Length: 490
Image 1: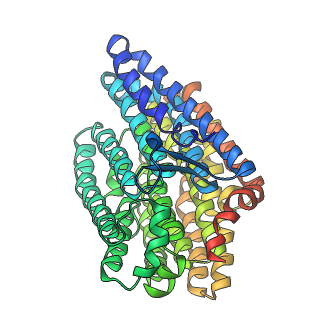
Image 2: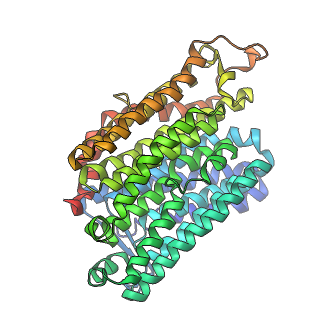
Image 3: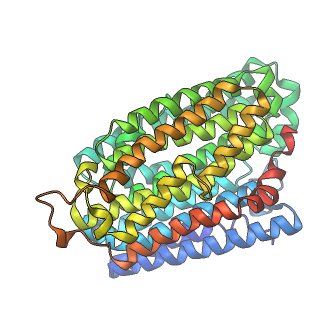
């Protein structure tokens, strides 16, 4: 059982190599390798979560070297939860990807599947590592894979990817500088060991600088407002199957890394009292929620609307972190899960519409509700969840954030959450009005407007069903997985 933490990213790395070799012989084998590697990783992550919840945390020391000298991999409720989320969304999007990539990029499917495996390996590695520098290694694996995936869609996507490379490199450098300050001050890179040594050094300027660099670096990576400038173009112009994978999980994993620093490496009061980090994150997030939601309303391109919506949704997570109380952290972590399902569903739907019609402008979707009933029903479910209407899962994470704001006596944050739900309703109901009320536009051929292939529609419907299921079982997730995580805040 102690091997379970390392066995989550290893199949993804192994099948990235196998998929490369197999794809040179037959391109279709790369898809099979990607599916198999992701399915194995999901199985291990699921088993790991079950074991952790029933028996306690799992620790694996790479090469048999005990920490702090060796690299430690850890499965606790939070890391197992994140690893399972990343691999599940990865598997669902991979199933969707085959038809989408053959339609958009038929000559590049082999490297794309390999890069997706490397991306998932990097993200799961971030989730399970217990070493500060090893987290940087996985961060770079995931980032390099994401840069390449985003760049293959054409000239616009290449320019967006270049901006992401520049800002992402700055973010990674900031994080590494912070880790360097911690290492020089404590002599260790192991998270648990550093957590024991840091309290005696909290007044050190080196440690204060480390916190500043780490928060800035991870803030850039998670697109925390106003460090989000790379995200709208990257999500808009990336291939459909790439945006459908990166948008739901990548920024959320970096948000998880920030939570891990807050709860595990540093004592929460250091971020709450000694340095006003959580206050800064909270107020920037509050501004980001409102501004990004307004910008989403202004968009005609569905993908760009969803991109600005993603900035606002990441800010919800930042708001929960900024509130820095148990309810706020539960709301933030629950929103990581809920938003992954909602945004994956929405981006896959945008890709499905583009697959059939080639259209991305919202006014051109008029009348699609009658011709694409299952796809638009899934869109409706995801949109209602984004607005925060029960029993969809999006309501419950917002509810915990509202309760956290009330508990903290911060009425501004409560008002921001309520106002943002109204803004979400404006831009999503605008789409619903087009697809269900407006007649089909002239020049749009009715025979072209039909459901995407079953291989693409099935993942969309699975995610839409998941939005309802997560809402129904949210109490189980909170009590069994997320509540224990907030122990340091109580």
